[in-house]
Length: 380
Image 1 (cartoon, one colour):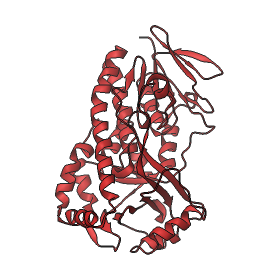
Image 2: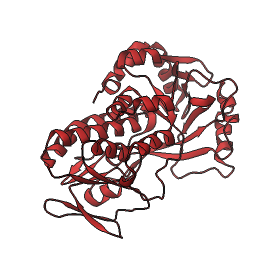
Image 3: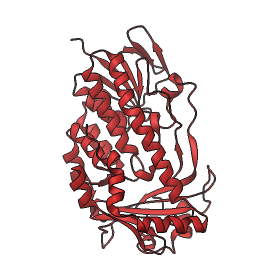
Image 4: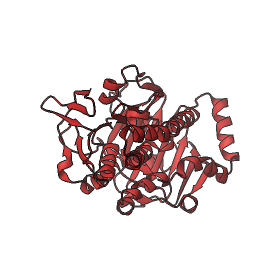
């Protein structure tokens, strides 16, 4: 059988996971990344059971569990520190066969890079054009062109591949709030539980990481494109410094230049994730808000499902159609659910926020986990 070839545009988590899944099925792969290194900036990452099952399909779940931390529990609090809902992470593992693991994004990326043959990686390579050519597709990067069987767009929210092949697609939309992400220095008394803390138009969450560090995130309903003249850490102290412990302690442990601020966008639904010999995955196909912690989880699912579909169907078109059928409905449902949760978490009108908090207190934890089963219960 002739070896099949693919170019993957984007060297993030999704692009590298797809490269690994396809390489192990005998594909010849190039991963084109526009920057000079395959690395990740940013902060922590939550990998729920569905993501760990996807990593198990890549034989990386054990390595990721070594690199990450498993929390004892978590839940939702109000800004005074009162628990509104609790989650037992041991119950998550019992129900879904894998735990919730938190690690640095860069550690997951490095695990994927280390598992790939070095010759598959093409740093400092920007794809500029994609052309159909009968039984192949031509990819150009300004230096050379090559014919391959498949192009995979794993190039994020502002995807070049989506712009080139889905020109009528609606652009990403600002969801109304910005986010800050940060990792603390090691704490003398490491946390064992995490929490999402709801205020009014603001939220602050934290979850433990290896080495006594804590991954923190915060949101606020503000216009897009904003910044803080005095620095983002000072803004976080102003907004959240009087909230219940451990939030003030966590903010005090954040390095001065260790805060990343990003406006939050999601992607209006696409009519399809494939077009000819081109497929999209991850944020390029279904960028979502971070409220469910499913962005990286869903792109890992995408990668292993795409490879499995192409392996199952020798005809490329049939395999891509099967991938689109399996992934589009699921991921667009997750996008909508995450957006709804964000809208609830960002409620600012006092009566609505009080009603939200009361509803959270009255909802049994078992019901919450059961409602998450369609997402967390996924298996390859």
